Each structure stands twice: as structure tokens, then as C-alpha cells.
Image 1 (cartoon, one colour):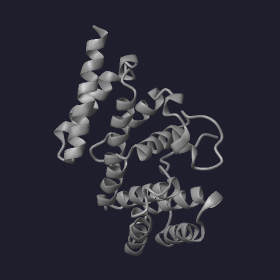
Image 2 (tube, helix red, strand yellow):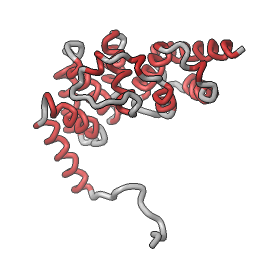
Image 3 (cartoon, rainbow, N blue to C red):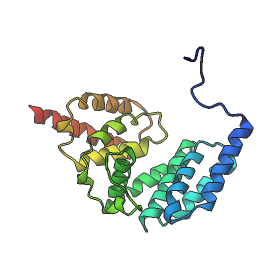
Length: 226
């Protein structure tokens, strides 16, 4: 029978149940490390960003510091730094995410970031057995159109992850100069998103430069139609 009356948007947990849930995630993160467990650890770290307890935020800070100085040493450390910085941003500590985005300027890290997103949303297909594909796969093997649409939903001035989302959108379009030319239905939406970002007070200097670059790409795509 159809359910009647108001229903909760999600599971309702008591404070004690919520604490037990996050305590279990923290235990998972502490007990998993490399190899086949690396993905499990990263997912646990990401979800810990929804915990606001000071001791968990401190743990996430330690996780960041344990890999931040080595983040260019290999893809595994890069991804660990990504998970920790995204989780910290969710708690309101977004300085680390800005630092991580700066690291994305390194070409190898930029390729890994695009391949990570494409694989995550299902645009880059195929079964992967380790993280190395993110730096080895040709980013031109997938179109970028689904990823662009995915990112447009996440270019929100209020998002704690805006620096990473904006950087990725800018990198995606910069790596595919013709992408917007083939997305005439997406361009008005992107223009609206960029205007909203420009009117906000949340952009850093790098963010403003990225928005300007996307505005330029939009203008060039429009001129190409004429």
C-alpha cells in the first residue's frame, strides 16, 4: 500500500547512534591503508567530513598533514590528500582544499584529477584494478560532455567544495577547446552559473581568473556558431 503522511528525507539517528556510526568509520579509516584497502580508506575519510566533532576534525587535519608534503610523490598520496582536503572543507576548514587545488596545477596531478572525475561519474568506462590509470589514461578517451553537465550542478557559491569543482570545470574546458561548441544547450546554463559566481564574494583570485577564463571560452564558442 502507498505510504501516507509526511516521511523523513533520510534516516533519523539519535546522537548516540550517529556517534557510533562515525566512530566505526574512523576505525575503518585507521585500520585500512594501501593496496586493495586504499579506496575503502578514502571513502571512510570522505564521509568523516560529515562529522563535526572536534576530535574528528583534528584527525582529518593529521591525515592531511601525513600526506600533504608528499602529495606529488605518487597517485595514492595525491588521492589521500584529496579525500582529506575535501572532508575538511565539509567541516568548514577549507584552507586545505585551496592548497590541494594549487597542487592540481602540476600537469600530472591535473590529468589524474580529470580521470578521477570521469571514472567517478561513469563517463570513463572499464574496470580498473588500481589507481595508476588516473595518470596513465588518455583524458581524450572520454568526451567530457557528461562531466561538464555534472560539474555545472556543483558550481554553487555556497558549496564547500567550490574551489575544486570550479578548477575541474576550467581544466576540463581548457583541455577540450571544442567542448562548448558542441554543447549549445549547456552554454546558457553555464553563463548563468558564471554570473552567479561573479556576483558572489566567495571567489579567490585564482577562482576569479578561472571564471574569467570560462567566460572567454563561452564567448569564443558563441562566435564559432556565427
